[in-house]
Image (cartoon, rainbow, N blue to C red):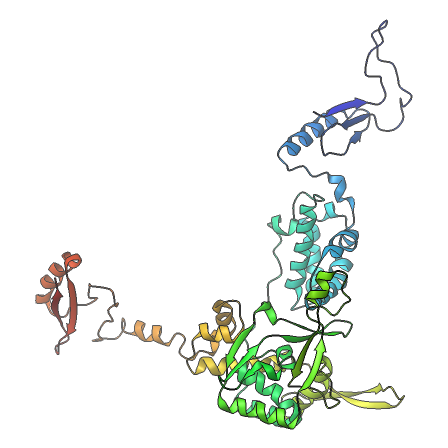
Length: 480
């Protein structure tokens, strides 16, 4: 059924006697022209004198409905904040490790800066203002926050609340640049100094980071059953994570990639010694999500798993990463001279006593992840393949490994520089490509005809070049 325009002020059919259309009871009140009857499109009314506008809107709505591109602009009257809280966020199914930081960034930056704008009002101008204000509030995470906004507006476009996502279609506004920083590794002396300052029960965490490239959560979630002492392999099957509310749980390593990392006998010896001195802690925790399941499927997916953790606290509990970072790791860094103590603060304990704790300077590059960088640097400097290292680190592809750690390869660029120098040094011999039949330089003119003839029949024979004592080329046909 095609759409139509209803005149609410006059009857549709004229009077049989006078031929004129009589006034309705709505005459002079409200909007006069009502466009209705278009399948899937809510009726829209226009004031008196706007018949042409009503006809234009009707034609546009009919055409876009037929092509599947119609978006009612009235659906975009909702505030961005309302759309996020009532429609977008409730439909998310992220695990806590993804959900908690995402919620923090959206409620901390997107909603305060852009939440009171209506969806249809978010255009290039609004995005420019948002970007400027965002960059004045945060530094390294601006790119991630922009990605979250892009995801929200993409969903709004799919829900037909806006015609298109302005983050993708605004040419004059670019996403904040993703910060690029080279990974930094510790020299051996610094690494050993930090290890020495750790409590003996926590030194294994350091060894797992430097010796096997494990992330912090992977080290804290490693069980004795994950070590294959005969094969000399560590199986990285999980990580220990915590929600924003402080609930622990197990989940797969980053990117859901389990992996195997071969380790030397010395590393295995340290694991045995640590397990003997500090017996593994049997720890049962939910899998994937610590929240109460609502369905049988969620109950199966979150079924608790028991792991004999190699690392535990002095109180015989699993390690909470924040406490460990602040009280154990930073203290060792300070004692080793890596960071400084910049102050002190008093903290009340449960018994009501006050305790003075040191305040350390912030140094993100020296947190536990530097152990992983150090592992990568040692491997690459020893000539290990980036492809192999990528598997050991659990990267999605070797490209990520090269992007992060290419500067750790001491020979990077040296071979190409050496080859290029041959073009500019007098009397240097040229380097022939392995699959090429054409020499780059002939020092004996008499050989030119031989080589030319040989090139002309290259499809019928195989040719071997041999450098002579005079610097020329001897050409031998080895197969015809």
